[in-house]
Amino acid sequence: RYGRAVSGMIRRPVRSLFLYALIIAGAGYLYLTLPTSFLPEEDQGNFMAMVSLPAGTLQKETSVRLREVEDYLMRHEPVEHVYSVGGFSFMGSGTNMAMLFVGLKNWDERPGENSSVQAIIDRVNARFAGDGQMMVMALNMPALPELGNSSGFDFRLQDKGGLGYARMAEARDELLARANANPNLAGVYFSGQADTPRLHVSIDREKAFSMGVPIAEISNSLAVMFGSSYVGDFMHDSQVRRIMVQADGKSRLNGNDIEDLHVRNDQGKLLPLSSFVRLDWTAGPPQLTRYNNYPSFTINGSSAPGKSSGDAMNALERITASLPQGVGFEWTGQSYEEKLAESQATLLFGLSILIVFLVLAALYESWSIPLAVILVVPLGLLGALLAVFLRDMPNDIYFKVGLITTIGLSAKNAILIVEVAREFYREGMNAAEAAVAAAKLRLRPILMTSLAFGAGVIPLAFAHGAAAGAQRAVGTGVLGGIITATLLAIFLVPLFFRLTAGKRGPDHPEGI
Image 1 (tube, rainbow, N blue to C red):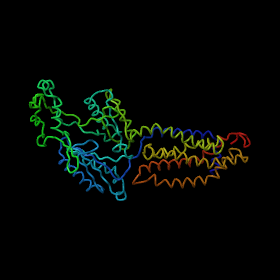
Image 2 (cartoon, rainbow, N blue to C red; image 1 turned 30 degrees about the vertical axis):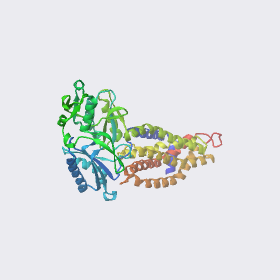
Image 3 (tube, helix red, strand yellow; image 1 turned 45 degrees about the vertical axis):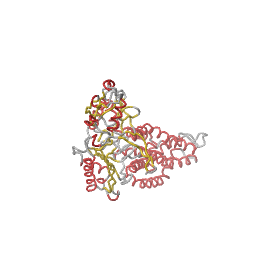
Image 4 (cartoon, rainbow, N blue to C red; image 1 turned 180 degrees about the vertical axis):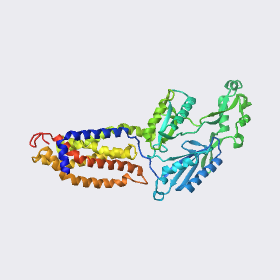
């Protein structure tokens, strides 16, 4: 029955070629519309959480609230240990900042989706979302070390038009508000510290000059008052120790203590510093950052559930384009690598197909045999794309590896038929007879090898635990590709051979 079906397709090729054209169109449509991503989110057995309290919170109070988060994690989540750091986080340093590094139990001890790292992170964020005095931001570890501090995208909002801090802060707040309302984005936040109260010191330079007080003397006095000053070294037990001068802690508790400072003028008289220095409380950023030499803000976040990182990045670019003129952006870390990977994918696939074609041309010393083999590639790509589409998975790097693997698997099935058909053709059969005979002879080996390989990648397609994201991405694409590359190729490859062989005889000098 299989032989009769193949023979009928060869006698009526128009209908089969129309089906082949639909397959190519379907594969192209799926590839262009499939959500893009860089790397899948992985359960690495740990995550981190950043804790932020209102500016000015004492370290003692921060430690108390930090203990609340630790107790929740140890009591209610499958956590093995928690390591907490006070005074520091990736958002900035200060007595109101803290960070936790959480190690989870082994994957075997927390089966099921409810115990995955992403489910735990979602519960932690939901548990502390309503706390008005403390912000807890739990984040997954980045899939690639040294490319960002956390998973998700890494975005830099830049002042490329010299707008100044105030206007850039307004643009940042507008971007955050619109991004968190966008259906493609989730958990978008400013990875930095909000404006905090600070003491602004205004020096009346003209009055100080008229009183004979050098500006350097005023600067030194303020440096010793609020910081410290290095004045020399001394020997202590055969060691060189530094001499640092600074005001006693009790003498610099508030800004009014500056009124007790005196400086000498050029005549050696002591004058009160308050006579030409004025103090004002203002608000401003505790830290100013730059990226590629432009003032910038670091914006982090992730894609919404059911959306890919490519969707999230495109949405953020559209929002940024509507901000005031002079506001620019750059991607960095893992997001920058994702942008590079998008532009290289088409070249990579084209090069892979070209290499397969040239190797086959050199092996068989023919142009027609490789062409009949290469025509089968879209059959496998359709299955791979359809499989990840049905499982709602993105087009990431691991899936691209699966696509390249599918190219080889598809070519393997075609070679099994075309190589035998070529021998029958040279022995005197016409192209149609040779194609049908080779297809019938090679049907069982094709099915056996394809079933064996497909069964081998099933554990990858449905993997759980460590590195499950990468395994599912590769396994799903390869499994779908081997199914369609087998079911469709056994019918269409004989037709491809018949069309590429043409009417040339076996003794023709240009015969296959």
